[in-house]
Length: 201
Image (cartoon, rainbow, N blue to C red; front, side):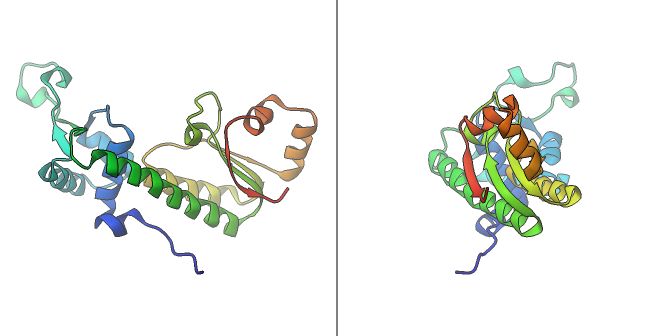
């Protein structure tokens, strides 16, 4: 079966809308202001405003959740408009679980792309991907791949997911040596909660 690149915008009609949805659903308790959203999802201000309006028309996003969040100031201009997901929205839970499943498809894209562009022996999702706040890295990649290429692929993935990713790239020899000397950092990953997607060691 041929691999088809899974892109959220194909399902939601617009890249900006898909990324906004992903961000709001991932942080349901967090209010965002427009410029913050623009920065986080790497989109144009106008398209963010347009898609926010679409999401508000749907009832999925609400504006200014309480005056308490307004920036203190005398004039209205000082008050920033905040946006937050409407947890009372009828499809909120369904969309949240849908986005969780779709992240798996996006992750598969990442694994495949890195695997094609390098010589990878071992690939693990850890850290924030398995809700482990104590691990210092989110991705452990053992093998050989050009740093610039890897950085570019991970940056695209970060934009798609709407958050920063810490990754560790380690040559196979170093991995085997660290394993031998039971290196603390490495052992915390290998013995901890993780999702192994490539294992050719």
